[in-house]
Amino acid sequence: MDLTELTLAEIRERLRRREIAARELTEKHYRRIDRRDPEIHAYLALCPDRAYAQAEALDQKARAGEPLPPLAGLPVAVKDVILTRDVRTTAGSHILQNYVPPYDATAVARLEQAGAIILGKTNCDEFAMGSSTENSAYIATRNPHALDRVPGGSSGGSAAAVAAHLAVAALGSDTGGSIRQPAGFCGVVGLMGTYGRVSRYGLIAFASSLDHIGPFARTVRDVAAVLRVIAGRDPHDSTSADVPVPDYEAELDRPLKGMKVGVPREYFGAGLDPEVRAKVEAAIKKFGALGCELVEVSLPHTEYAIACYYIICTAEASSNLARYDGVRYGFRAPGTTELDAMYLVTRGRGFGAEVKRRIMLGTYALSAGYYEAYYLKAQKVRQLIYQDLRRAFEQVEVLVTPTSPTPAFRLGEKTADPLQMYLADIYTVTGSLAGVPGISVPCGKTQAGLPIGLQLFANHFDEVRLLQLAHAFEQAGGFTL
Amino acid sequence: MKITRKDVEYVAALAHLELSEEELIRLERELDSILGYIEQLNRLDTTQVEPMAQVLYEARVDIALRGDQVGGCLPSAEALAAAPDATDAFIKVPKVIDR
Image (tube, rainbow over all chains, first blue to last red; front, side):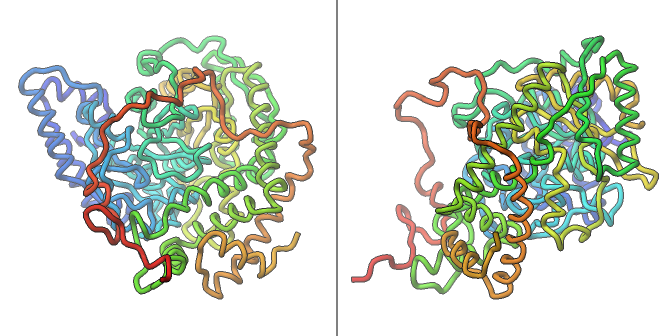
């Protein structure tokens, strides 16, 4: 039996019956990482001391016959924009290359309290800005399904780690699609909860009105279990919602009969790869066979979403990234004798090309004379996009779309043209702007063997319906369509 | 609207970014192309539309507020440990005021 194949439910049961030890499970994962990661590069850093200490504590509990916590033994990878106490956290950037956080993100602390084992930190686009993980200042992660392809981004390392069985679950962050798109490219499940569902305390901020932390796993059930642990109000994050957290796992098997599923016609137009279209349409048929009522809907402002998103996210980023100035943490350029010069040189050398591009774009959009033309305009268009979704959710409970217009592209294919890279997020950003929850689940592969992702959106705080539909689809063999 | 070299230099100064000659040339081209794409937002009439700054959900109005109470915090040595140049209680930076 290969211990890296197990799901959370299987791990929990075997630990409880003492058929396996958490230590052995951890060891097996590290061994697989040693073997496979040199060609995938999912991880930037490993934290075996922390992992084995946690495993030891769980094994002691199991030996003593004490009850095990809900995520007992779950080997987890954490995206490197999420703070881990005493474990270097770089955000994929040179400017934080030696940063060792003095505290844990709430999501990380909650995972460990629930018995999860943190294996290490995963690669990502610098400050989560990108759609391929090629913007990491350290290394490009490869797609485990085809090593010449990108894993998607920005949470590419987390998606690749779960796909290659280098972790059973992972945390990522999603601002415009950074969990869902790599989940689709790597053939795993990835969820972005409602805005405010999961605390962002300890998440390195990119665009605060859009940032989320969320889980990856290989099954919908495992994603549901992790979400339940990390969701909920956190006094350290004033934007975290005080809304009760359901037992998502317990709700999974409720019948779907009569669930209204909307198909937005704007997501099936020009630019959609024919193989992706065929699999997504087959998945939609399957939803019909599962008892859902299919309804065609329209989200008329979809075509404006990318333009709107790239003004809002860059404006917020230019403000959030002002803190990297060589004073309180991270890299400081040596040899400057004046404070202003130190700022300029530190930031000029510390940030990579995409981060500079976004800081420049955002600073421009917020600058005197352009604020109304760009930032305010984008906020108004955001309202129109949100109203599109509100109207849709008066008619249906879930929306179904492709996650991305194409399967994983080749390394280097889009790096020369930033706008082409931005368009990779075309189907994911609408949900981000509206703050609704979204999930990507696998719905088959192309003839060349590349995974295809199917995206579902639900109304605010209706993660239960997303998970139910995704779970029913998975159980009916949909992942292998 | 065409982005000029002057615009790029002005914005780089606002953003505290030192850019190389090569970066200035590339950013002029790239910002022009991206902002050209963003121009499409102007096809929409938004005069009657409320701007949306944040996703709102049904929540108690006082949710973001907490009592004004002393709580735990990091010891200063830990809080300053990540600074590139610090003493026990201070962070050192290059001289700001000339005297």
